[in-house]
Length: 303
Image (tube, rainbow, N blue to C red; front, side, top):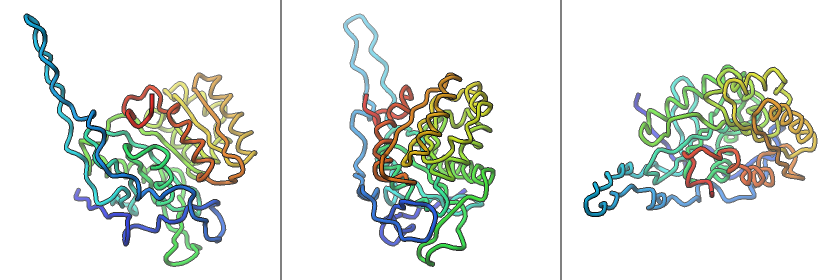
């Protein structure tokens, strides 16, 4: 399958200049509090990642075998690009430019009346420039504010799961050597978080670590939690901007911990129903905990 990338920079993709504080209504969202992802440095990863031959052993001892050589530095039209997805609208992809070894994938699903460009912008800043961030688009809403300001939703969790799997297939087909094998970190905001619990329940092995922002906690019943734990669920991070979310997430976290799944709740106070600003800051501070023990994320996560 031939795939072409389009840069999300000037003239490509949808605008990255705005991140919504809410995902419903038609009020134009405010400017983000963080720098746009398109300004993230695109220099290659640390030269320490480039494998070199090991030193020769002492006299009488065999020399160390050569270390595996690194991959060619990953290239793309920009840090954020459109990824064609068979059978679906193009996804948005944050690319770990310059990567010389396989990099893990973070999946970022948006809320209702939202846009994947905004999700990829914020999540690239949260996880750093050395991780793939795949943001499924979903379907356009008919009540979008303007022709040049289309908003999106997901029809249902089954449709979202199909789009996710098609997006992951497209990503792996395009960068077969640079995409690390293994599970994917699922992140969801609002509608994306709610639907993510159902998707996780059908395939816990693919999504053993999740970040649920402003949604999903109420879907984590005792039965759902038990099944997730038995199937290998590992960690869940809840991000909240509203007080009600904190209470519901704390209750879900207690169920998870009781079942043997590590859980944590962070609260970006005063933000409201949002994934930007203080919520993003709190989630970023806890991301290292979420991926702790997963060597694929080094060196993105400080020890």
